[in-house]
Image (cartoon, rainbow over all chains, first blue to last red; front, side):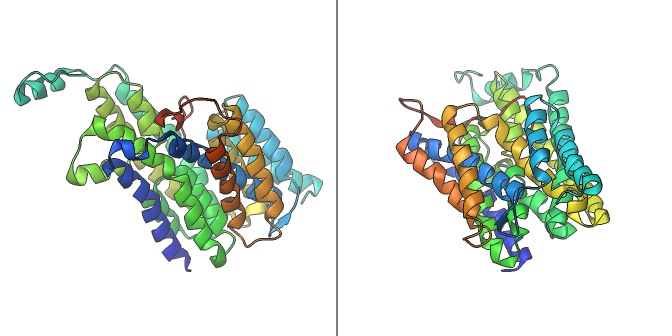
Length: 104
Length: 257
């Protein structure tokens, strides 16, 4: 599938939830089970993305300069540092470890 | 809440006389600016993941949901075979917006085109600002003002970020791969207060990482999503008793779409 087609289908798919919520009767999605799965789904998908983006490369498990960067990201978020600054510092840590200490 | 006893005209004029909450407009714009600011990182990461500027802008203009957008580009970086999984992951991450829309429908009471536009602006920030207000008129103002501000600044920032990303070159040199992972840490953080959510997160992270050598690109994240379904169905480590729609919490304080 081409990237463009993916971008368009993805955009429509994400918007479909918003439209669905605006039009369906309130009781339809209000059941506790559905609300709980929806809430946990967000957490699980984001956690999965941390794993893939942080600890794998080219489909293989790999621990490299991203690990200290992620530890810093956790610490900075915990300290309530603004999002953009936290992301920038994490990137800088990985970049510096690669440039000056030869990390992968 | 305005009472319903008056005539339609009287009701309308009464609602119009409720003044905006002091500082509401500033708060809406402030949230929009703060959120928009990190749209810069989305734009840069999207280009680093291999999308062009216009694909990146299409995501910000029409998908308009930070978590879903970050997920889409992270998985689409795996190449065209991963696109289907990128769509699915972005779609599943967008489910919470559906719950927000349900919550906003009786407050907004809009119809037609305005309802469709309102649906587009239904994101973490607009809901967080709206639900912090006490009366209907200001809940509506908070929703529309914040939604519009975030939309404007998020798209401007995405464009700037994409230009920056194009100028940077090899993503790893600048630690942009680490930045993408860090972005997900920031997005998940406000959702980890409950023990059940924390346990699901740890297992999901381990599952996605460990299966990645054995399944096609994109699949690990979907399998991680399966962890949520298992825990949701069984409610392992969950709080006993009924949970309601309020379980889909709106992160407040920090502003993230």
